[in-house]
Length: 536
Image (cartoon, rainbow, N blue to C red; front, side, top):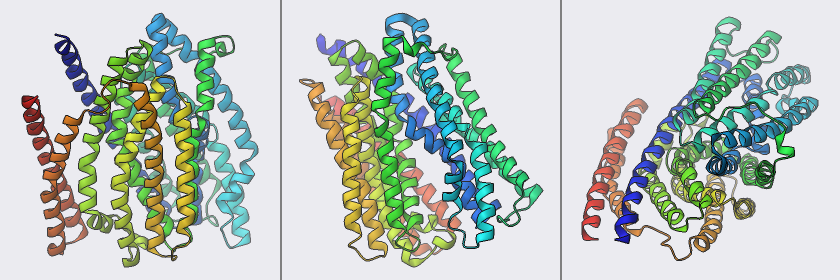
Protein backbone atom coordinates (compact mmCIF):
# COMPACT_ATOMS: atom_id res chain seq x y z
CA UNK A 1 0.00 0.00 0.00
CA UNK A 2 2.86 2.34 0.84
CA UNK A 3 4.44 1.70 -2.53
CA UNK A 4 1.28 2.72 -4.38
CA UNK A 5 1.05 5.88 -2.33
CA UNK A 6 4.53 6.99 -3.39
CA UNK A 7 4.46 5.83 -7.01
CA UNK A 8 1.60 7.97 -8.27
CA UNK A 9 3.02 11.27 -7.08
CA UNK A 10 6.42 10.25 -8.51
CA UNK A 11 4.89 9.59 -11.93
CA UNK A 12 2.99 12.88 -11.84
CA UNK A 13 6.11 14.76 -10.75
CA UNK A 14 8.17 13.07 -13.45
CA UNK A 15 5.70 14.22 -16.11
CA UNK A 16 5.77 17.76 -14.70
CA UNK A 17 9.57 17.75 -14.63
CA UNK A 18 9.74 16.52 -18.22
CA UNK A 19 7.20 19.13 -19.38
CA UNK A 20 8.98 22.00 -17.60
CA UNK A 21 12.36 20.80 -18.86
CA UNK A 22 11.05 20.73 -22.42
CA UNK A 23 9.69 24.26 -22.00
CA UNK A 24 13.05 25.54 -20.78
CA UNK A 25 14.92 23.68 -23.54
CA UNK A 26 12.71 24.95 -26.39
CA UNK A 27 12.75 28.59 -25.33
CA UNK A 28 16.45 28.44 -24.48
CA UNK A 29 17.07 27.08 -27.97
CA UNK A 30 15.20 30.07 -29.41
CA UNK A 31 17.39 32.41 -27.36
CA UNK A 32 20.59 30.61 -28.40
CA UNK A 33 19.67 30.67 -32.09
CA UNK A 34 18.97 34.41 -31.99
CA UNK A 35 22.22 34.87 -30.07
CA UNK A 36 24.08 33.12 -32.88
CA UNK A 37 22.26 35.32 -35.39
CA UNK A 38 23.41 38.36 -33.41
CA UNK A 39 27.06 37.33 -33.72
CA UNK A 40 26.70 36.59 -37.45
CA UNK A 41 25.03 39.94 -38.20
CA UNK A 42 27.55 41.96 -36.19
CA UNK A 43 30.38 40.26 -38.06
CA UNK A 44 28.70 40.75 -41.44
CA UNK A 45 27.93 44.46 -40.90
CA UNK A 46 30.97 45.65 -38.95
CA UNK A 47 33.41 43.36 -40.75
CA UNK A 48 36.89 42.19 -39.71
CA UNK A 49 37.87 45.52 -38.14
CA UNK A 50 39.36 46.72 -34.86
CA UNK A 51 36.13 48.57 -34.22
CA UNK A 52 34.14 45.33 -34.58
CA UNK A 53 36.50 43.67 -32.07
CA UNK A 54 36.04 46.54 -29.61
CA UNK A 55 32.25 46.57 -29.95
CA UNK A 56 31.85 42.80 -29.71
CA UNK A 57 33.86 42.77 -26.51
CA UNK A 58 32.60 46.08 -25.12
CA UNK A 59 28.88 45.42 -25.28
CA UNK A 60 29.23 42.20 -23.24
CA UNK A 61 31.26 43.86 -20.48
CA UNK A 62 28.17 44.66 -18.32
CA UNK A 63 26.96 41.06 -18.54
CA UNK A 64 30.41 39.79 -17.61
CA UNK A 65 30.63 42.23 -14.70
CA UNK A 66 27.21 41.16 -13.42
CA UNK A 67 28.33 37.52 -13.64
CA UNK A 68 31.13 38.38 -11.23
CA UNK A 69 28.55 39.91 -8.83
CA UNK A 70 25.91 37.18 -9.04
CA UNK A 71 25.17 35.89 -12.53
CA UNK A 72 23.57 32.44 -12.81
CA UNK A 73 24.15 31.82 -9.09
CA UNK A 74 21.40 34.33 -8.27
CA UNK A 75 18.64 31.91 -9.30
CA UNK A 76 20.24 29.01 -7.40
CA UNK A 77 20.26 31.08 -4.21
CA UNK A 78 17.09 33.16 -4.63
CA UNK A 79 14.68 30.48 -5.88
CA UNK A 80 14.96 28.31 -2.72
CA UNK A 81 14.70 31.47 -0.58
CA UNK A 82 11.52 32.56 -2.34
CA UNK A 83 10.02 29.06 -2.17
CA UNK A 84 10.60 29.00 1.59
CA UNK A 85 9.26 32.54 2.07
CA UNK A 86 6.05 31.81 0.15
CA UNK A 87 5.65 28.51 1.95
CA UNK A 88 5.96 30.12 5.39
CA UNK A 89 4.25 33.50 4.89
CA UNK A 90 2.37 33.38 1.60
CA UNK A 91 2.80 35.61 -1.44
CA UNK A 92 3.07 38.76 0.67
CA UNK A 93 6.14 37.40 2.42
CA UNK A 94 7.55 36.30 -0.94
CA UNK A 95 7.22 39.87 -2.24
CA UNK A 96 8.95 41.21 0.86
CA UNK A 97 11.92 38.88 0.44
CA UNK A 98 12.17 39.61 -3.30
CA UNK A 99 11.99 43.38 -2.64
CA UNK A 100 14.72 43.20 -0.01
CA UNK A 101 17.05 41.08 -2.15
CA UNK A 102 16.39 43.37 -5.13
CA UNK A 103 17.23 46.44 -3.05
CA UNK A 104 20.50 44.92 -1.87
CA UNK A 105 21.45 43.75 -5.37
CA UNK A 106 20.64 47.11 -6.97
CA UNK A 107 22.69 48.93 -4.31
CA UNK A 108 25.68 46.70 -5.04
CA UNK A 109 25.13 47.01 -8.80
CA UNK A 110 24.95 50.82 -8.60
CA UNK A 111 28.30 50.89 -6.83
CA UNK A 112 29.76 48.58 -9.49
CA UNK A 113 28.37 50.80 -12.28
CA UNK A 114 30.09 53.81 -10.72
CA UNK A 115 33.35 51.84 -10.45
CA UNK A 116 33.04 50.64 -14.05
CA UNK A 117 32.59 54.22 -15.24
CA UNK A 118 35.62 55.36 -13.25
CA UNK A 119 37.65 52.52 -14.72
CA UNK A 120 36.30 53.03 -18.25
CA UNK A 121 39.67 54.37 -19.49
CA UNK A 122 41.34 51.13 -18.34
CA UNK A 123 38.62 48.96 -19.88
CA UNK A 124 38.85 50.98 -23.10
CA UNK A 125 42.61 50.41 -23.15
CA UNK A 126 42.06 46.62 -23.06
CA UNK A 127 39.73 47.00 -26.05
CA UNK A 128 42.15 49.01 -28.16
CA UNK A 129 45.73 48.23 -27.09
CA UNK A 130 46.23 45.76 -29.98
CA UNK A 131 45.83 48.43 -32.68
CA UNK A 132 49.29 48.94 -34.25
CA UNK A 133 48.86 52.53 -35.51
CA UNK A 134 49.25 54.90 -32.51
CA UNK A 135 46.93 57.54 -34.01
CA UNK A 136 44.18 55.03 -34.71
CA UNK A 137 44.80 53.43 -31.31
CA UNK A 138 44.27 56.77 -29.57
CA UNK A 139 41.00 57.35 -31.42
CA UNK A 140 39.95 53.78 -30.73
CA UNK A 141 40.69 54.27 -27.02
CA UNK A 142 38.39 57.24 -26.50
CA UNK A 143 35.61 55.84 -28.70
CA UNK A 144 35.82 52.58 -26.74
CA UNK A 145 35.65 54.56 -23.51
CA UNK A 146 32.47 56.27 -24.77
CA UNK A 147 31.00 52.85 -25.57
CA UNK A 148 31.79 51.55 -22.07
CA UNK A 149 30.16 54.60 -20.50
CA UNK A 150 27.01 54.06 -22.58
CA UNK A 151 26.65 50.38 -21.72
CA UNK A 152 27.74 50.52 -18.06
CA UNK A 153 24.16 51.11 -16.75
CA UNK A 154 23.24 47.72 -18.15
CA UNK A 155 24.67 46.16 -14.98
CA UNK A 156 21.61 47.49 -13.11
CA UNK A 157 19.31 46.18 -15.82
CA UNK A 158 20.90 42.73 -15.68
CA UNK A 159 20.32 42.70 -11.92
CA UNK A 160 16.61 43.42 -12.45
CA UNK A 161 16.10 40.89 -15.22
CA UNK A 162 17.89 38.09 -13.34
CA UNK A 163 15.76 38.79 -10.27
CA UNK A 164 12.68 38.57 -12.49
CA UNK A 165 13.84 35.27 -13.98
CA UNK A 166 14.41 33.80 -10.51
CA UNK A 167 10.97 34.95 -9.33
CA UNK A 168 9.26 33.21 -12.26
CA UNK A 169 11.25 30.01 -11.76
CA UNK A 170 10.31 29.98 -8.07
CA UNK A 171 6.64 29.93 -9.10
CA UNK A 172 7.14 27.23 -11.73
CA UNK A 173 6.97 29.55 -14.78
CA UNK A 174 9.81 29.02 -17.26
CA UNK A 175 8.82 30.00 -20.81
CA UNK A 176 9.19 33.79 -20.61
CA UNK A 177 12.24 33.57 -18.37
CA UNK A 178 14.05 31.37 -20.92
CA UNK A 179 12.74 32.98 -24.12
CA UNK A 180 12.92 36.73 -23.34
CA UNK A 181 16.68 36.99 -24.16
CA UNK A 182 15.67 36.49 -27.80
CA UNK A 183 14.06 39.95 -27.72
CA UNK A 184 17.33 41.50 -26.56
CA UNK A 185 19.19 39.72 -29.37
CA UNK A 186 16.70 40.80 -32.05
CA UNK A 187 16.76 44.47 -30.95
CA UNK A 188 20.54 44.51 -31.07
CA UNK A 189 20.51 42.89 -34.51
CA UNK A 190 18.12 45.58 -35.79
CA UNK A 191 20.34 48.28 -34.27
CA UNK A 192 23.42 46.95 -36.04
CA UNK A 193 21.53 46.65 -39.34
CA UNK A 194 20.36 50.28 -39.04
CA UNK A 195 23.93 51.40 -38.35
CA UNK A 196 25.18 49.49 -41.38
CA UNK A 197 22.47 50.89 -43.63
CA UNK A 198 22.81 54.52 -42.50
CA UNK A 199 26.51 54.90 -41.71
CA UNK A 200 27.96 52.20 -43.95
CA UNK A 201 29.35 48.73 -43.29
CA UNK A 202 32.88 47.57 -42.54
CA UNK A 203 34.23 50.90 -41.26
CA UNK A 204 37.12 50.99 -38.81
CA UNK A 205 38.10 53.46 -36.11
CA UNK A 206 39.60 55.91 -38.64
CA UNK A 207 36.14 56.53 -40.12
CA UNK A 208 33.79 55.62 -37.26
CA UNK A 209 31.86 58.65 -36.08
CA UNK A 210 30.69 59.41 -32.58
CA UNK A 211 27.15 58.91 -33.83
CA UNK A 212 27.86 55.26 -34.69
CA UNK A 213 29.14 54.57 -31.19
CA UNK A 214 26.20 56.39 -29.59
CA UNK A 215 23.61 54.52 -31.67
CA UNK A 216 25.22 51.15 -30.96
CA UNK A 217 25.71 51.86 -27.26
CA UNK A 218 22.21 53.24 -26.72
CA UNK A 219 20.66 50.52 -28.88
CA UNK A 220 22.43 47.84 -26.87
CA UNK A 221 21.20 49.36 -23.61
CA UNK A 222 17.64 49.70 -24.91
CA UNK A 223 17.73 46.03 -25.92
CA UNK A 224 18.69 44.99 -22.38
CA UNK A 225 16.07 47.36 -20.94
CA UNK A 226 13.32 45.73 -23.00
CA UNK A 227 14.54 42.32 -21.89
CA UNK A 228 14.42 43.48 -18.26
CA UNK A 229 10.92 44.87 -18.80
CA UNK A 230 9.70 41.49 -20.05
CA UNK A 231 11.18 39.70 -17.06
CA UNK A 232 9.55 42.17 -14.68
CA UNK A 233 6.25 41.65 -16.50
CA UNK A 234 6.68 37.92 -15.86
CA UNK A 235 7.37 38.68 -12.19
CA UNK A 236 4.13 40.67 -11.97
CA UNK A 237 2.24 37.86 -13.68
CA UNK A 238 3.27 35.38 -10.95
CA UNK A 239 2.30 37.91 -8.25
CA UNK A 240 5.76 38.69 -6.86
CA UNK A 241 6.49 42.14 -8.31
CA UNK A 242 7.24 44.83 -5.72
CA UNK A 243 9.41 47.92 -5.37
CA UNK A 244 12.99 47.27 -4.20
CA UNK A 245 13.48 48.13 -0.54
CA UNK A 246 16.21 48.44 2.04
CA UNK A 247 14.55 45.91 4.35
CA UNK A 248 17.51 43.59 3.92
CA UNK A 249 19.25 45.61 6.63
CA UNK A 250 16.70 44.58 9.27
CA UNK A 251 15.27 41.30 7.96
CA UNK A 252 17.15 38.18 9.04
CA UNK A 253 15.76 35.98 6.27
CA UNK A 254 16.73 38.46 3.56
CA UNK A 255 20.18 38.91 5.07
CA UNK A 256 20.60 35.13 5.02
CA UNK A 257 19.84 35.07 1.29
CA UNK A 258 22.28 37.90 0.54
CA UNK A 259 25.00 36.25 2.66
CA UNK A 260 24.59 32.99 0.74
CA UNK A 261 24.79 34.97 -2.48
CA UNK A 262 28.03 36.64 -1.41
CA UNK A 263 29.50 33.31 -0.34
CA UNK A 264 28.49 31.72 -3.65
CA UNK A 265 30.01 34.32 -5.98
CA UNK A 266 32.91 32.00 -6.71
CA UNK A 267 30.54 29.38 -8.16
CA UNK A 268 30.17 31.58 -11.26
CA UNK A 269 33.43 33.54 -11.03
CA UNK A 270 35.77 30.52 -11.10
CA UNK A 271 34.35 29.09 -14.36
CA UNK A 272 34.68 32.54 -15.95
CA UNK A 273 38.32 32.69 -14.80
CA UNK A 274 38.94 29.20 -16.18
CA UNK A 275 37.49 30.24 -19.54
CA UNK A 276 39.80 33.26 -19.64
CA UNK A 277 42.85 31.07 -18.87
CA UNK A 278 41.99 28.61 -21.64
CA UNK A 279 41.45 31.38 -24.18
CA UNK A 280 44.77 32.95 -23.20
CA UNK A 281 46.70 29.69 -23.60
CA UNK A 282 44.87 28.88 -26.84
CA UNK A 283 46.30 32.13 -28.21
CA UNK A 284 49.67 30.39 -28.43
CA UNK A 285 48.35 28.46 -31.47
CA UNK A 286 47.36 30.30 -34.68
CA UNK A 287 43.57 30.16 -34.81
CA UNK A 288 43.50 28.45 -31.44
CA UNK A 289 41.21 30.94 -29.70
CA UNK A 290 38.55 30.39 -32.38
CA UNK A 291 38.67 26.60 -31.88
CA UNK A 292 38.45 26.72 -28.08
CA UNK A 293 35.86 29.50 -28.09
CA UNK A 294 33.68 27.63 -30.57
CA UNK A 295 34.03 24.48 -28.48
CA UNK A 296 32.91 26.43 -25.41
CA UNK A 297 29.90 27.77 -27.32
CA UNK A 298 28.80 24.29 -28.39
CA UNK A 299 29.44 23.01 -24.85
CA UNK A 300 27.15 25.58 -23.23
CA UNK A 301 24.51 25.40 -25.97
CA UNK A 302 24.15 21.64 -25.60
CA UNK A 303 24.12 21.88 -21.80
CA UNK A 304 21.42 24.54 -21.67
CA UNK A 305 19.02 22.71 -24.00
CA UNK A 306 19.43 19.39 -22.18
CA UNK A 307 20.62 18.75 -18.63
CA UNK A 308 20.74 22.37 -17.46
CA UNK A 309 17.18 22.88 -18.67
CA UNK A 310 16.19 19.97 -16.42
CA UNK A 311 18.11 21.39 -13.46
CA UNK A 312 16.29 24.73 -13.73
CA UNK A 313 12.95 22.93 -13.92
CA UNK A 314 13.50 20.73 -10.85
CA UNK A 315 14.95 23.40 -8.53
CA UNK A 316 11.60 24.72 -7.18
CA UNK A 317 10.40 21.19 -6.35
CA UNK A 318 13.68 20.30 -4.67
CA UNK A 319 13.49 23.52 -2.67
CA UNK A 320 9.95 22.76 -1.48
CA UNK A 321 10.94 19.26 -0.41
CA UNK A 322 14.01 20.56 1.40
CA UNK A 323 11.97 23.28 3.11
CA UNK A 324 9.47 20.69 4.33
CA UNK A 325 12.36 18.48 5.52
CA UNK A 326 10.79 15.67 3.48
CA UNK A 327 13.73 13.38 2.76
CA UNK A 328 11.62 10.87 0.82
CA UNK A 329 10.27 13.50 -1.60
CA UNK A 330 13.67 15.17 -1.90
CA UNK A 331 15.27 11.84 -2.82
CA UNK A 332 12.49 11.10 -5.30
CA UNK A 333 12.82 14.48 -7.02
CA UNK A 334 16.59 14.15 -7.11
CA UNK A 335 16.39 10.73 -8.83
CA UNK A 336 13.85 12.01 -11.33
CA UNK A 337 15.91 15.09 -12.09
CA UNK A 338 19.12 13.10 -12.52
CA UNK A 339 17.38 10.59 -14.80
CA UNK A 340 15.82 13.33 -16.94
CA UNK A 341 19.16 15.15 -17.21
CA UNK A 342 20.98 12.05 -18.44
CA UNK A 343 18.12 11.05 -20.75
CA UNK A 344 18.25 14.55 -22.32
CA UNK A 345 22.04 14.56 -22.69
CA UNK A 346 22.73 11.08 -24.06
CA UNK A 347 21.32 11.54 -27.60
CA UNK A 348 23.30 14.77 -28.06
CA UNK A 349 26.43 12.91 -26.94
CA UNK A 350 25.93 10.11 -29.47
CA UNK A 351 25.09 12.43 -32.38
CA UNK A 352 28.05 14.73 -31.82
CA UNK A 353 30.64 12.02 -31.09
CA UNK A 354 29.78 10.05 -34.23
CA UNK A 355 29.47 13.12 -36.48
CA UNK A 356 32.01 15.48 -34.94
CA UNK A 357 33.99 15.77 -38.19
CA UNK A 358 31.02 16.76 -40.44
CA UNK A 359 29.83 19.20 -37.76
CA UNK A 360 33.32 20.72 -37.53
CA UNK A 361 33.37 21.08 -41.32
CA UNK A 362 30.06 22.96 -41.22
CA UNK A 363 31.12 25.23 -38.34
CA UNK A 364 34.55 26.10 -39.73
CA UNK A 365 34.03 29.32 -41.69
CA UNK A 366 36.19 32.12 -43.01
CA UNK A 367 39.70 32.20 -41.64
CA UNK A 368 38.92 29.20 -39.48
CA UNK A 369 38.31 27.01 -42.51
CA UNK A 370 41.71 25.37 -42.63
CA UNK A 371 42.50 21.67 -42.80
CA UNK A 372 44.96 22.06 -39.91
CA UNK A 373 42.15 23.35 -37.65
CA UNK A 374 39.12 21.33 -38.78
CA UNK A 375 40.60 18.07 -37.45
CA UNK A 376 41.40 19.48 -33.98
CA UNK A 377 37.99 21.20 -33.89
CA UNK A 378 36.31 17.85 -34.60
CA UNK A 379 38.28 16.21 -31.78
CA UNK A 380 37.36 19.09 -29.45
CA UNK A 381 33.67 18.67 -30.30
CA UNK A 382 33.91 14.96 -29.47
CA UNK A 383 35.30 15.84 -26.04
CA UNK A 384 32.66 18.53 -25.56
CA UNK A 385 29.93 15.97 -26.30
CA UNK A 386 30.99 14.01 -23.22
CA UNK A 387 31.67 17.13 -21.15
CA UNK A 388 28.12 18.47 -21.60
CA UNK A 389 26.68 15.34 -19.98
CA UNK A 390 29.11 15.52 -17.05
CA UNK A 391 28.44 19.24 -16.71
CA UNK A 392 24.70 18.58 -16.60
CA UNK A 393 25.12 16.10 -13.75
CA UNK A 394 27.32 18.63 -11.93
CA UNK A 395 24.76 21.39 -12.44
CA UNK A 396 21.74 19.43 -11.23
CA UNK A 397 23.78 18.26 -8.24
CA UNK A 398 24.66 21.77 -7.16
CA UNK A 399 21.06 22.89 -7.77
CA UNK A 400 19.96 20.18 -5.33
CA UNK A 401 22.47 21.41 -2.74
CA UNK A 402 21.41 25.03 -3.20
CA UNK A 403 17.82 23.86 -2.68
CA UNK A 404 18.97 22.76 0.78
CA UNK A 405 20.61 26.18 1.28
CA UNK A 406 24.04 24.55 1.10
CA UNK A 407 26.58 26.72 -0.71
CA UNK A 408 29.87 25.45 0.70
CA UNK A 409 30.17 22.28 -1.40
CA UNK A 410 29.11 23.93 -4.72
CA UNK A 411 31.68 26.64 -4.03
CA UNK A 412 34.34 24.04 -3.27
CA UNK A 413 33.40 22.15 -6.45
CA UNK A 414 33.91 25.28 -8.58
CA UNK A 415 37.24 25.97 -6.91
CA UNK A 416 38.34 22.38 -7.46
CA UNK A 417 37.25 22.50 -11.11
CA UNK A 418 39.26 25.69 -11.63
CA UNK A 419 42.35 24.13 -10.03
CA UNK A 420 42.09 20.98 -12.14
CA UNK A 421 41.50 22.95 -15.35
CA UNK A 422 44.43 25.26 -14.58
CA UNK A 423 46.77 22.34 -13.87
CA UNK A 424 45.69 20.43 -16.97
CA UNK A 425 45.94 23.55 -19.13
CA UNK A 426 49.48 24.28 -17.93
CA UNK A 427 50.47 20.70 -18.72
CA UNK A 428 49.16 21.38 -22.22
CA UNK A 429 51.97 23.90 -22.70
CA UNK A 430 54.34 20.92 -22.87
CA UNK A 431 52.61 19.79 -26.06
CA UNK A 432 53.52 21.19 -29.50
CA UNK A 433 51.88 24.50 -30.41
CA UNK A 434 49.44 22.88 -32.81
CA UNK A 435 46.07 21.13 -32.79
CA UNK A 436 47.12 18.65 -30.11
CA UNK A 437 47.48 21.48 -27.61
CA UNK A 438 44.01 22.77 -28.45
CA UNK A 439 42.44 19.35 -27.95
CA UNK A 440 44.20 19.06 -24.60
CA UNK A 441 42.86 22.44 -23.49
CA UNK A 442 39.32 21.24 -24.20
CA UNK A 443 40.08 17.97 -22.38
CA UNK A 444 40.90 20.23 -19.42
CA UNK A 445 37.24 21.37 -19.45
CA UNK A 446 36.11 17.75 -19.16
CA UNK A 447 38.52 16.98 -16.32
CA UNK A 448 37.35 20.05 -14.40
CA UNK A 449 33.69 19.07 -14.80
CA UNK A 450 34.47 15.51 -13.67
CA UNK A 451 36.13 16.84 -10.52
CA UNK A 452 33.21 19.18 -9.78
CA UNK A 453 30.57 16.52 -10.44
CA UNK A 454 32.37 14.05 -8.19
CA UNK A 455 32.47 16.62 -5.39
CA UNK A 456 28.76 17.47 -5.42
CA UNK A 457 27.64 13.85 -5.94
CA UNK A 458 29.67 12.72 -2.94
CA UNK A 459 27.88 15.25 -0.76
CA UNK A 460 24.46 14.40 -2.20
CA UNK A 461 25.04 10.72 -1.51
CA UNK A 462 25.34 11.70 2.16
CA UNK A 463 22.25 13.91 1.99
CA UNK A 464 20.01 11.27 0.40
CA UNK A 465 21.11 8.74 3.00
CA UNK A 466 19.11 5.50 2.95
CA UNK A 467 17.00 6.62 -0.03
CA UNK A 468 17.88 5.25 -3.47
CA UNK A 469 20.39 7.55 -5.13
CA UNK A 470 19.94 6.58 -8.80
CA UNK A 471 16.97 5.30 -10.77
CA UNK A 472 18.88 2.56 -12.56
CA UNK A 473 15.93 1.29 -14.59
CA UNK A 474 15.44 4.59 -16.43
CA UNK A 475 19.19 4.90 -17.05
CA UNK A 476 19.35 1.40 -18.51
CA UNK A 477 16.48 2.29 -20.85
CA UNK A 478 18.29 5.49 -21.89
CA UNK A 479 21.49 3.54 -22.57
CA UNK A 480 19.62 1.05 -24.76
CA UNK A 481 17.92 3.89 -26.67
CA UNK A 482 21.26 5.68 -27.14
CA UNK A 483 22.83 2.48 -28.48
CA UNK A 484 19.94 2.15 -30.95
CA UNK A 485 20.81 5.63 -32.31
CA UNK A 486 24.35 4.64 -33.28
CA UNK A 487 23.49 2.97 -36.63
CA UNK A 488 21.48 6.03 -37.73
CA UNK A 489 24.25 8.43 -36.65
CA UNK A 490 26.85 6.21 -38.37
CA UNK A 491 24.76 6.22 -41.56
CA UNK A 492 24.79 10.03 -41.46
CA UNK A 493 28.60 9.97 -41.23
CA UNK A 494 28.90 7.44 -44.07
CA UNK A 495 26.65 9.41 -46.42
CA UNK A 496 28.68 12.55 -45.65
CA UNK A 497 31.84 10.74 -46.78
CA UNK A 498 30.46 9.57 -50.12
CA UNK A 499 28.08 12.40 -51.00
CA UNK A 500 30.58 15.18 -51.65
CA UNK A 501 27.81 17.81 -51.81
CA UNK A 502 28.03 21.42 -50.77
CA UNK A 503 27.99 22.67 -47.23
CA UNK A 504 24.27 23.48 -47.32
CA UNK A 505 23.59 19.89 -48.35
CA UNK A 506 25.87 18.75 -45.56
CA UNK A 507 23.96 20.85 -43.03
CA UNK A 508 20.60 19.59 -44.36
CA UNK A 509 21.76 15.99 -44.07
CA UNK A 510 22.98 16.53 -40.53
CA UNK A 511 19.66 18.12 -39.57
CA UNK A 512 17.53 15.41 -41.19
CA UNK A 513 19.66 12.61 -39.80
CA UNK A 514 19.58 14.18 -36.35
CA UNK A 515 15.78 14.32 -36.39
CA UNK A 516 15.54 10.66 -37.48
CA UNK A 517 18.08 9.57 -34.85
CA UNK A 518 16.22 11.45 -32.11
CA UNK A 519 12.98 9.82 -33.25
CA UNK A 520 14.60 6.40 -32.91
CA UNK A 521 15.88 7.37 -29.47
CA UNK A 522 12.46 8.45 -28.24
CA UNK A 523 10.74 5.37 -29.66
CA UNK A 524 13.20 2.89 -28.18
CA UNK A 525 13.18 4.79 -24.89
CA UNK A 526 9.41 4.44 -24.60
CA UNK A 527 9.49 0.74 -25.51
CA UNK A 528 12.29 0.10 -23.03
CA UNK A 529 10.44 1.99 -20.30
CA UNK A 530 7.29 -0.08 -20.88
CA UNK A 531 9.25 -3.33 -20.93
CA UNK A 532 11.18 -2.52 -17.78
CA UNK A 533 8.01 -1.26 -16.09
CA UNK A 534 6.19 -4.49 -16.99
CA UNK A 535 8.96 -6.65 -15.55
CA UNK A 536 9.02 -4.63 -12.32
